[in-house]
Length: 57
Image (tube, rainbow, N blue to C red; front, side, top):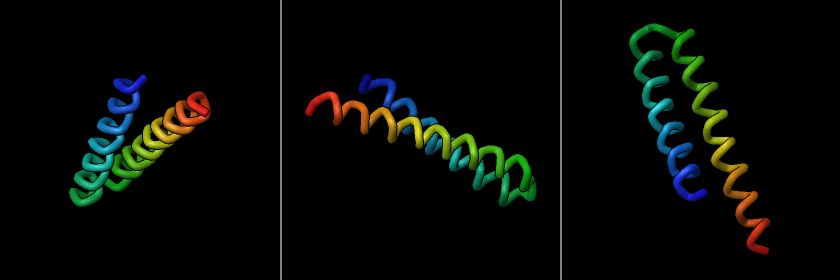
C-alpha cells in the first residue's frame, strides 16, 4: 500500500508541474485539465492515507 500512496503523490506533483507549464505557455484549457487530474490524484492519496490510519486504530 505504501508504494501505491507514494506513486499517487509523485504523479500528482508531476501533474501540478505540467499544469503550471501549460498555463504559463498559454494553453489554459490543457492546464486546467492537469489541475483537475492532479487534484483527483492527491485526493486519492489522502483517502488511502486516512484508510490506513483507520485500519491501524
